[in-house]
Image (cartoon, rainbow, N blue to C red; front, side, top):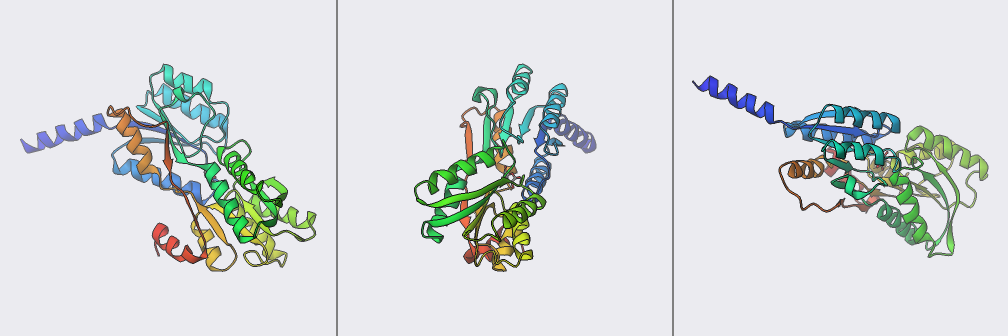
Length: 308
Ligand code: AHR
C-alpha cells in the first residue's frame, strides 16, 4: 500500500540523514551570528542533523564540544576555532575515532593531515587589501590607530600581518597605537575612548584600522561622543561587510570595509557532504573570495546581501 511505501521511505531518509557536529566560536558580533544562522539554515535545507555548539569564546568549551561529538559518533565534525593553537590532541582523537574534521572560517595551527580541509577566507589578504586602500586614500602618509581582534585568533594574526607588510612599503605610514577590542562593539568603543584620551583627541591621527566592522562601530560611537568626525576628518577601514558598516558609510561615518562572506554554509556543507559521499579531491584550503567596498556601492551591498 502507498502509505507503507511512504513510511518506509521516510524511515530510510531519516535513518540515512547525516549527523554533523559544529563547534562555533561564539556569538560575539553580527558577522558571527549571521554565520551561525546560515549554517543552521543550510543544514536544515539539506536534511542534516546538525549538532550546534556555541563555545562562547572559550577554547575549553570547544574542546569539550568536540569530545562530545566524538563520543556521539557523529559522521563529521566542523570546527570554527576560537584561536589557532592547542588543537593537535583533540584532532588526533577525532582521527583515531575515524571521524573526518573540517575547519570552517578561522584556521588552525596543526598538521594538515589531521583535518580534511579548511573552508574559509584569506585573512592576510584582507589586511593587505585594507592597507592598500589606506595607502591610496592617504597618499602614503598616515598615522594609524589599530583595533585588533581576539588575541591568538587567525583573523587577528592574519589581518595584522598582511596590513603591516603593505604599510612597511610606505615610510610615512605607521601604527601609533594598537590594542585588542576582542571583535566586539563594546570593547571597540572602550579602546577607542582610551586612544582618544592618550592621543589628545586623536591629534595627528589620520585613520582607524579595525580588524572588524563591529569594533569600528563602537569606535565611531566613541569618536562622535568626543566631538570628532570619523569618515571625514579621520579615515576608517575595517573588515567584514556587516549591514551596520554599510549604514555607517551611507551616513558618512565610515569609508571602506573588506567583505568577508558569512553565508558560507553552502560551501562548507558541499565539501563535507561531498567527502562523506566519497569525493577525495578537495584542496586543503577551499578559499572563500573577498573584496573591498566603499560608500560608492554601500547601498547596493546592503540590498544584495541583506535585502531592503
Ligand atoms: O573569523 C572571522 C572573524 O570573526 C570576523 O571577521 C569577526 O567579525 C568574527 O568575530
